[in-house]
Image 1 (cartoon, rainbow over the protein chains, first blue to last red):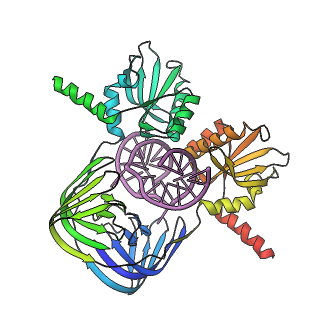
Image 2 (tube, helix red, strand yellow):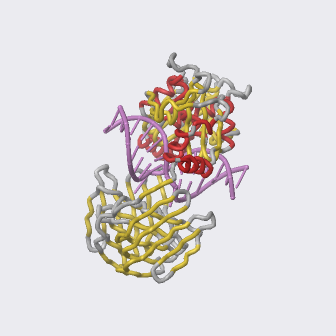
Image 3 (spheres, rainbow over the protein chains, first blue to last red):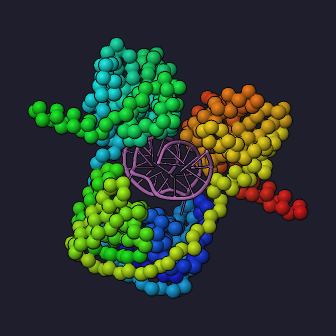
Length: 221
Length: 221
DNA sequence: GACTAGATGTCGGGG
DNA sequence: CCCCGACGTCTAGTC
């Protein structure tokens, strides 16, 4: 990784055109060749950047970065305060926990939480349709089919997504009629309203409680 | 801005839980207090980060960053290769051109491009509804109302967005019936299919050609 | 503060 | 390679 603190101006020409007048900034060049131009603020997003793969041509006071898509980043350097290079090596990488996948896993194991009185049983996770997989497909105690869309945060586009799935599923005479459940840790009022209009049930799931149920069960063994 | 190259391990506990085992990384602390942990690859996105505002507590070999939402980033430092601090000052900022706003501007000036035979005239840009503004509202030669949704890239959620607007607009007896046009530089097949099912017209707009029309008109003055 | 829509979104998975 | 959905999305704008 190479770090350069420099007074520089930058132009990007690609998916859009953007310009940065001359100022002090950090130029970061990573081992994979990607380049980022950072100001001293504004979260982690750089002002300008070019992701790998790209070609890097360095002149005395000018960098030209181009990529196969024909985008260009040009840095004109007026003054250099720092220019250091270090090899960091491969990163062992990040392990994550607690995202939507885990919520889906927990609900797949405990579909009853979604509708305590309906006797829901899981048919399949990621049930395929021609427009993508439904998170959970279940049947209730009466044999009725239930499609479940799971989000960490329930917003209006999630309701649209479930609506599209229901539309497809209901064309299958083996499944129809299919009803929908929209499940999330928190569901926004607008999303609830839209769901109600469309006859879709909303369930707000308590993630910590669900993990509690899970660990209770483990404790039984 | 402070730049630290260090062998370190990192944990984040907040919207999710994430861990990074010990390795050489770049720690970047900006003037606004935000912290980013970068590996030597993987585009501009850091492995872990905490955006401002947050509180930063530094020990001999441990950083603890917390924010008002109760999220925590902890960095345990094993070895420091570099630790430099420079004041960069306020950045003059980025100027952009060519995004969706410009496309909307061009189409507002030339709605005829969207349906050459219909005699479209612009009624209003950003026509308000109770769920947000429609990009363009037009009338055709027969007085029929047309709602236009503009995207740089036409995808399925854009069709959903326009569908929601049409639903609202068609409740207004002064406007109904309202038909929809979905305009973008490129429209994905799935989005076209969904639009067709819903009776929404798709128009792929040539941005450069449209700019050409614009400059031709300017030339007439 | 809530809600909406845009982003050079980025990133990862599946066909 | 494109297509698609998730993201600690982030961010700017409106109400």
